[in-house]
Image: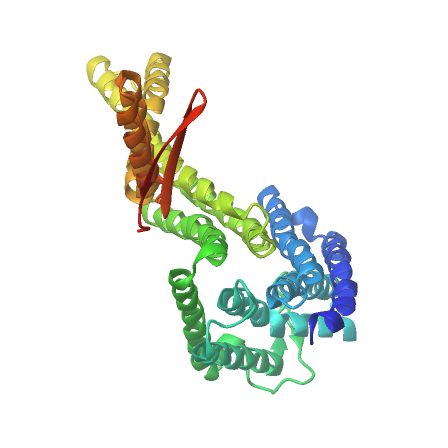
Length: 428
């Protein structure tokens, strides 16, 4: 459909997405409270549920905005579908099935439908978020016809999951363990989805399509230029920094057994869940698009800076405690050691930040670094140089080196006469 024919439909759908998401989320909380699960859950579990609601709410809000503003771009429809599946199917549908099984112990038709849809459409949501969103970002089209095979593989794998989940004999209800719902259209003896022989083959197709989607992001990023390059930077930033950081810190927490790393991994994953659709919306709507370079620069600087200062702080405290215990035999160190470590961190902050910033500029922003060094050298020479002709040539050389124009001209006005000096430079 062209934009003119699609626009009225997109407006109606777009304005309906957020109310539907809010209604589904509220229904889930009310049904969970009625089933007694909200009272039984710990504070951490309840906070986790709220954070998931906010994170997927960002999918619904940004998706609705893109559907209204960019109806021909499939990215907005994908984001909206993810948010609505989570809210209406997993939220309201599963919530109602849980409520019925917890209070009546006998499911009705609506509870069976809700649990069945949630069991079937789980992998549809995963396919939209993990395969088709990166495969079609940012313009809603494939990189080329060659990547159609990746989309087809993802569709076949997802369809296999849906059919398998639809035909199991017992539909699981996760919130009520051990009390599944009999599937009226299921095949007797199929058991759980993971136990089916076809599950491994379908899972392999799905993973292969997901890897192909990641490869398409890499290829598109390397080929992109101009505006598309900035769009890909927004997408890659969230994936690498937040989601990649969550996976890394989670793995380190499992290996080292450090509890706070696991909590930090969870915080990063929740931030990634919320900021991924926001980054997609910024990239497609091109709102403050070029600020991603500043964000990346600050992340590259303050990430290593924070890690270095934390290492110095905890290393200083641990060393001081070891020395104090060896000299005095006491187990508890005085507060003076913590105060001293804090003062050391404060003294090292600015020098370390300048050194890391200089290294990042030299390594990743070489042209800007060279231009700044050239201007600094010209400023220093300007204080000492008195020959006007030499300054003319120096200024023309600085402009040629930093801005790299096709032609440079300098005109100086002296009283009523005009003296011109020009120099040509071919672009590099």
